[in-house]
Amino acid sequence: MTEEGVASAGSCRGNNMALSSAGHDEAEWEPPSEAELKVIQARRERQDKISKLMSEYLLKGYRMLGECCDECGTILLQDKQKKLYCVTCQELNSDVDKDNPALNAQAALSQVRERQLATNTDEMVSRPEHCEGAALGLRSSAPDPALPASTAAPNALLARNTLAAAEETILQKIGWASQHLQETTSVERSIQLCSLIRSCTDALKGIRELPQ
Image (cartoon, rainbow, N blue to C red; front, side):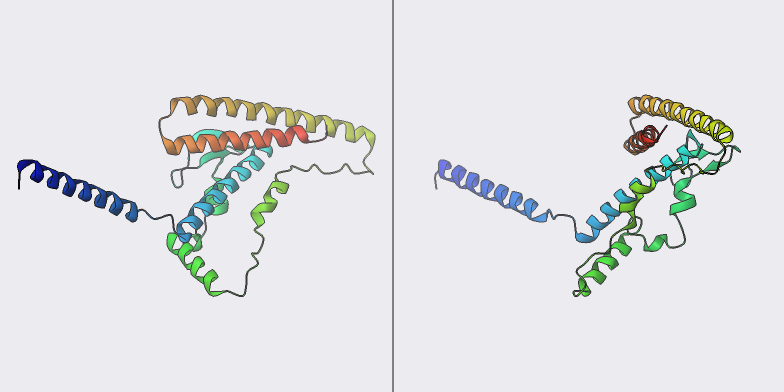
């Protein structure tokens, strides 16, 4: 065989090896499993729930601090008695976290298997998270029709002042979060700050939609 033939054969073998390697790499990629997708969805719903809870507590007069919980990394709140409060640790985390697909991939896999076995139950039970938006609607209590006008007027003024103070605090926190978002290089911190901004925005919208 001539040198040209050897070179040509080597080139063909190299091309075949490259194509084989490329095909092998493509075959190795697999889309996320149903259990993995369930974990991702559960974590997204969990983060939405945290944002809604924080919005509700801001409207109750809690202050948002520039500190995060040492246990879960959620931004801390502070009540009027200066007591620190973490909505994730206090209201979401519990002894049954091992069964939460947002925190445990094995739990997500088990839930997928259980659903596959229950072939006769195609209808999904509606999740309570879908109703949380209504809870965030910040309904105000209707005034007592028997309340004297002399008492109702000061109460209405107090309510307006309280809402105005809450609105000012929320706007300050949005500015604070925006500034820190520009400065941080941490992806996790950026996600928390974006969640905080969204939570504050939802709370602000709820305040402005209340009847004055």
